[in-house]
Length: 431
View 1 (tube, one colour):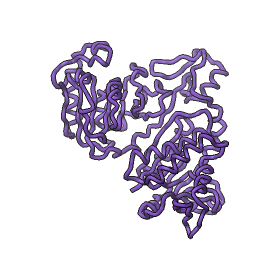
View 2 (tube, rainbow, N blue to C red):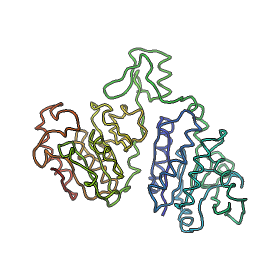
View 3 (cartoon, one colour):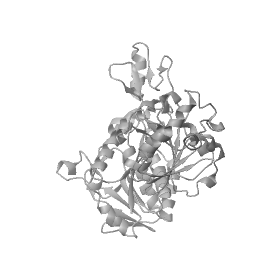
View 4 (cartoon, rainbow, N blue to C red):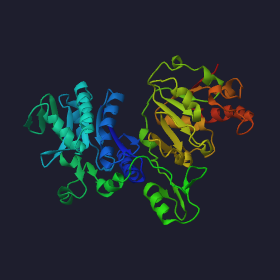
């Protein structure tokens, strides 16, 4: 089995490129996992993240081979050749060699094995001391350290590593000679680096809010009057709201690409009731079952250091960035996204994607996201008001449940939950 992945920086430019790839994969019904990450200070440092992401995916999915595809690519045909490659256990890697010589990593296959893990770890290490060469050049150089190349047909052996040559149509540059001659790509490479490389090289570290720029309640940035210098700075980093002196960050709404990521696994949805104070690692015995934390309950769950896939979901913009996880994936409503400019591991969602009302309580939205990711059974944890009628918050939350209104409002949530989760098997955990 194989899994297709990509990664991209969270800036507006590469986010838009990744959205094109997501759409193309969805049209062909090819599952794609997308990993956004915060930009480094140079374009080269950004592309060096590829090896880290690939290694992470191999470790996270030990039963799958991993295929990386650059985020500025598009799928034109179903990549069926990877079925054949994956079935041939002698093949360790597969990549296209431009002009028969230059290894390209824009589309590349990795067998999930100890020796492939080892070469990727070495690839990561040589990037740390590189003389500013491309990641693909460094990987090719690394292969030669295992032995002189022995070419036989469409395979190349470098010592213990067997590399399969991918046809050019699996990494076909959109304006290449072959493309102009009518070759139909399987994977079309759109070469966004030609347009964005210089821009990314001017991004020296994390963005800091300039003097004179203000932040609105929804997290967007604005200036009170026209200022050409400030506008240029903001236009380079954010998405301007048409006709306004206001800017928003753009995060890919690519949650649909995660469909069935946790197929047939029970989902734990975590509330903020007093039971939250009592939870231990023993309450989550299956490390593969995903956990969805409502708002700032994420902090108590991350303190348990669980191995489970963990998510934090936030809709309410008034919470600002108080729900920022340490490392969990943040599922953030589109209207609240601008509060998390500096958090790399995030996805936006819209209630409309799930045919849900905009004002629906977050636990019901979380259940629909859990369903999208493959859950058929839901375990609702620390929703004390729905079971014991205790409307207080856990002490670890740090503020009163009456902070934003009468706490008795939580007593009506059980009826709403029963309505929207009627089709699921539900269990409750309260103490």
